[in-house]
Length: 255
Length: 180
Image (cartoon, rainbow over all chains, first blue to last red):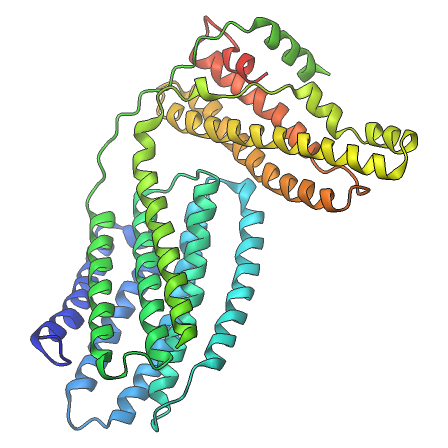
């Protein structure tokens, strides 16, 4: 069951990518691709990536080297799309708060620089323990990409929580899915890149595939199912009889 | 492999924090009742006195350097306490402002938006000021840092008063009374 090319493995690699293609189509129909253009591209890209890599993996005529070359190339493109997606979420969350944009930009820039340095240092320490260097190199690349992605999404969540920023439902769902997937993928790729679980790497593949499937379902839920209309009643201000303090304050404000 | 363990632990901590923030966000909407009562009164005048550079100059002239540094550190600690209180109040006001955004009165919504903007800016200034205050504690001879918080807090009081007036025209400026 938990083996490469088992039924579960085929399902976990196929289903989330087909679902993403469906999600991209539904987003187009509902006009959501205009609100989240990069996420729409991301969904489409993931589906296309699967449509290319899945047959390459299955076809006996395709040499393993060619599969890994294609995989490596797709990783680079995926990394670019994912970073653009993180930027889109930041822009979406900060749009109602122009006063925070400058600080957020500064924070993202420096966090990004720091994460790139940490990712490069950890990549330098990872072993190349396979004669086909593309395999460990792709593991190391995945570790580096997810480290940067996880760090940026983490900063976004902490920043929004500190300033009590309100998220719209869709942006929150996309960010949450991205956060969960990047954290778990970072952990699994770090184990793989550093030579852990050498005989049982297929287990980490299953963790990655299952996590991605869960995140795709989360994106479906947050993007397509409308949230509960919480009837917020305007908050009444409390009764306080502090006229003396109030007079003092107004005098101070008029100075 | 040690590096991998370290990265796995860091990723697990990051995931736990992200999930905790996500859960607290979904619970936030149901916790708006009784918020205004939690606003802590702040003596703005005393705070202004603390951040006044002239006061520091006066103390610098009058006191011997070691004593000045000790007094300045105490003043910085007090300043930090005020800034933290202002930050807490701004936090509460952001939540009140968000709840008030659901009002049917367009003017109240506008006032709520202004309140949220001002309170958010105050939290930003409070964070930056606290960093500077703590840095100044290490170098007590450096200049004061938190005057922007005082200005921001005054503007915030103005926004809160406007929102209070619009929501409860019969009982004006209650929130500002609490703030003061």
